[in-house]
Image (tube, rainbow, N blue to C red; front, side, top):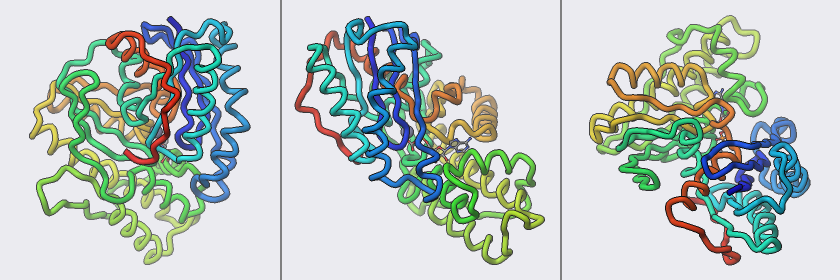
Length: 333
Ligand code: KG4
Ligand code: ZN
């Protein structure tokens, strides 16, 4: 069985072909970073317009790299939400057209579930129950998974996502978009203890995140110290801010691990490409004797392989699914 997945929830146009054992036959990701970089963030209308231009080429290329034609595809999978509505509609409409014309099942996929499911592409046996930290540009959430497909949301951001905070601070310093990878590279040479940032604290018992306070504190520090690209403490500032974001993430993982007592830990989403976060998360897991699962960097940022993987596993558990032409996109969870 061959499944073609399509992902257009934000600013990456992606198509992938997988077999039913979750072997990736192709995973094409066309980034729009250059288009959005001058604005320091994703411009939704530009994103939808670019998806409409790229989607045909990206799907064709995914088939070519897999050595297949569209007639070899047995089922289609597509991201239904959450994401930018115009962007989602491009992928959804394209997938509906293919599934309708070739009379194949069309499986809708939730973007957040797909990010978590990306770990199953490289690891078939994950001990359950499991705790998953999803960190991206649009979301920062904790999920408790009793078993596969049983996602219990136990914490989410109340304002900015972690990636969004990194992107906004980078924008303020004219470092380009996306800011996360730029900050990571420069922070490697800085002292993470030079600037102190207070971590957000929830007054209730919740495991929710908040990054807008940390972002505001960072912007205040920039102004007060007149930090710019040539300031002697520029790299130290970036290292300290990156470190504060990671500490805030791990503080909630610690709380959740104590409360839910999982048998393993997952880290996923675009910010999970960050080497220091990967290292610190793995160290935390090791200290607490939890097996840890982190997808390869290219499977952390938005990609269609994770979409097709979730659909492939759903088909194998639920049997063949229908061609659902009535599907609509949803912008929020
Ligand atoms: O998962 P993703 O591709 O898209 C969303 O669903 O949001 O995540 C994109 C986010 C951006 O905020 C970007 O700055 C961040 O992931 N990111 C990183 C790194 N690579 C991407 N953040 C920190 N370090 C990185 N190496
Ligand atoms: Zn994403």
